[in-house]
Structure formats: structure tokens, C-alpha cells
Length: 597
Image (cartoon, rainbow, N blue to C red; front, side, top):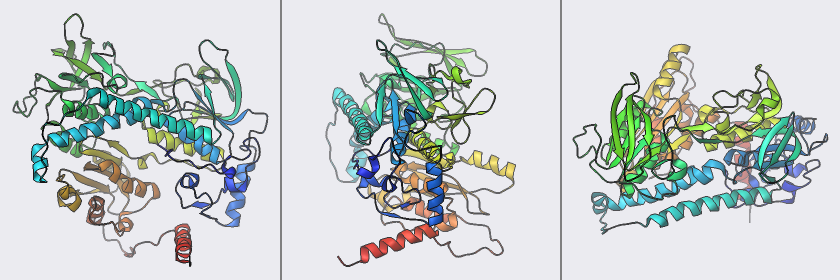
């Protein structure tokens, strides 16, 4: 998610929404040294210009008929349908590029992530992490701490999650308003080429034109057939985030990110019972606690298998959790008239009935489905695929004949490429780059993902099976190295030695294929690896990076240093020099900060 806590708006950033962009607002060839948006750090002018030739090319691309201040009779340069994290990221970048921009939102700004997803769930997980630590008597005593009878107020926890969502939603709204984005309320529908109609029930629809349109409508929880949702005893993550209760015994259908995180919350906050630790790991229904129901033969099927195996040992086996794998929940009936929730399980392969569970509640965490109905795609000859809008590598929408629909893009969950909020934002920024005259293709393998359990899990790139499959097809070797958190000083100081980091790479070229981490603050550590993949940094280069001691970042430092490359005749044993633009930036900063005050 883009940072919105502090947005400083300069005159150059917001000048002339309908006219040509000023040089200060545009700076198309500048190398930014203040991050993605200099304005947010109050240093918009700290940029190093590139060559005059490149600047001329960039200016020409930015001022041709494809872009520039809503000329050509259009109401807007860009209209975005959907004001979630993806739409917000695209809108802010569009304004920075000098585009007159509007965003249409039929519900509330922030979309799923802010209101019903990543943001409130993190608030709950922070509480569950604190409670888990306070209840771990051995952990506390090992550091000389004594805590008696820790507890929590359920409504207070729920309020914390809700208040966080409200605050972030307000930040997103204010940031767009401050930068001059028009926020239009209503449901957006594409009615023709470069035309959008929007409105809400009880009011007259309005029609606007836009040179470019981005679809960013996100997704909704997917509920399989046979499952009846009542929002109280059988519910999705949308309802669970309200934390209206902490059931004594809850079944979680699905063991992906959502299910795993909620198992962490419920077991920390008191879903009790006889878990596998008390049953000798017999996989049968427990009396209370959490029960996973997974259709595939193993838990956490989307994770690297080695990481999933360790995660099961750390996050599931010691806790009051049991599970059923290789089964479908063919029917789930909510609790009513004094009867519990009934879950009928069938074999995933034979479809034969296996057993019926009786639980207090059931959370349906079977993934998400694109929210693309009512967009009017039929008006432009676009046919969805399982609800997803078909796009090419540049997020351009494809019609039923396989042709690119001009000036129409789709980002985020609605296109199904990678259903993560930050992926949606990155796709949105990539699209804005394209409509601003600069070709840009996002490398989705460089986008990290994280599961905020305790400890956390994070990953970027390929899993080991995926890497080996790719190697077999393309004819190269794959190497794997691992390091342990037990060898990290900072992790040991916090008595959090459980965890590993895993690097998958090519020994012939040093290309990083994937990195997977389970351990303390894994979600923060993964970005060094994701940035390395995005920039094409090789193992033989990044192993020379310096990490502060003692920090958790040294887990990755040791990981990269452990990688061994194949000897190759003529290989330059010296590390590559930084690219010239970076050297210019470093030289400028050295001059700037060494000058007399």
C-alpha cells in the first residue's frame, strides 16, 4: 500500500489539472532519490537529470496524442473504476504524471484490503501475537519476566481493528483529495469506447468520457456451493474481522493465507479444546479449538513444501488445531434452534461421504472471486474467464477475439494475475507509466507475499518444485541453500530461534529464482530478496552487501553468502560495479552532505 500518512502538495505537483504539465511536476527523466514520491517526503526537487537526449524522448512521449491534460474533448485523462489499494496507487501516480484523474467508488474508499482484509486483520494479528507471547510462561521466564493472568477485552480488540481501518481509509481519501483526484460516488459501468456511466440507487446516472480507463474492482470472498452463510455461525473473512465472538470450536475451510492467519487469531484468543498436541497427533475431530478442512492432500498447498512442513510443525502441531486433508465440505448448515453447525465431509477424489462434524462456527476461507459483474464488458466485446477480466502482460484488456481493447486496462484481483493488494498497486503504477508514454512491464515474480502468523512466513519468486520444473524445461541446474534463525544473534536475543530462510538460485549464472522465509519478522525481511529479483541482482553481487549487526537482516546476509556458484572459465571474480545512474546519485549525495554548512 502506498504511504499516505504525510502528503506534501507542491504547486508543481497539482498545477494545471486540465492543461499541460509543468516541468517541475513532470521531470520525466529524473532519477528519484526520495523514493516513489518525493512530495511525500517534502523533497520533490532532489532529482538528478539524465542525458538531454533521453529527456527529449521522454517529453515527446509524454506530450503526444496519448496523454496530456484531458485534451481531445475528454472529461478526464484517466478514470479508475474502483478505489481500493490498486486504484489508489494508480490515481496518485497519475496525478504525479500530470493526468487529470477521477476515481469511481461504489462502496467505500480502500476496498477489500483496507476495510475487510489486510488492514483490520493485521490489527487482530498484532493482538494475537501479544497474547500468545504473554501466555508463553516458559518464553517470558527465560527473559526474566513475570506476567500473571493476561487477558483481553473482545470488543476492545474489535474496535482496534475497526479504528485502524477507518484511519487508513481516511488517509487514502484525504491523499487523493489533496492531490486533486475527483472521487465520484456510485457504481461504474463501461457503456462504450472511452465512456463510463456511474451512479447510485435513487439518483440519476451520469456519463463521463476518459482517454484511458482502468478497471480496479477487486474481489469478494468465494463461497463454494452447498455452504450456507448466515454471517454469525457460518461466515467469511468479511464477517470474521468484526470479531463478534471467539468460538470455542471453529472449523476453518481452507488452509491458505486467510485460514492460517485466522487460526493464529482464534487459538491465541481462546478457541479451546483438545488439539493434536494432547491427542498424540491423531487426526480426528477435537473437542474445541480449530479444525482445518483442506481439499488437497497437504496443508498450506500454496507454500513451498519444505516451508509448509516446517510451518505445520511450528504453527499447527503445538497448538489446539487438528485437520482433515483430502476432503471437501460438501454441505455446511448454520447453527439454529439449539443445534450446532453441521459440516458434511466427502472424499475429494471419490466423493464418498466420510463424516459429519458438529462445531460452534465455520469460517469459509476458500479464496476470493473477482468482482466484475455489472461492469458493462459486454458493451465492448469482452468476455470474462471464470469472472476474471483477460489482460496481456501490460494489463491491457483483451476482447473476445483476442485483440487489445484500446485505452482500457484492468489491474488487481479483477484480472487474477496475482491477488495481492500491493500487486494491484504495482500494476496500476505500471499502467500509468504506459499511458504516460513510457513502456513498462511488471515482473510479477519479483512481487513478495507474506502470511502474518507468529512466526511469519514470506516468499518471493518460485517455489523449489516450480524452479526445478522450469530448470528441466530450459536445461539448467538449480541449487538450494538454507540458513537458520537459531544462528542469528538478534533472533536469539528475543528467544525466537524457530525459523529458516531458503534461497533457490541458478549456480551457473547466480540468478535468484526464489526466496522463502519462516521466522521472526519474515514479512519485513523478504524485501531485500524481492528487490534483488526486480533489479536483476545476482547472488555474486548481493553477497557483498553490508548488513548492520546484530539484526535479523543478517539471516539473508548469511543466506546469500552461503550460495556457491559453478566455476566458469572467464568469469569475473570481482563484484560488478553499481550502474552509472546510481553512481551519479551517490556522487551527488556525497557532494551535498560534505559541503560546508
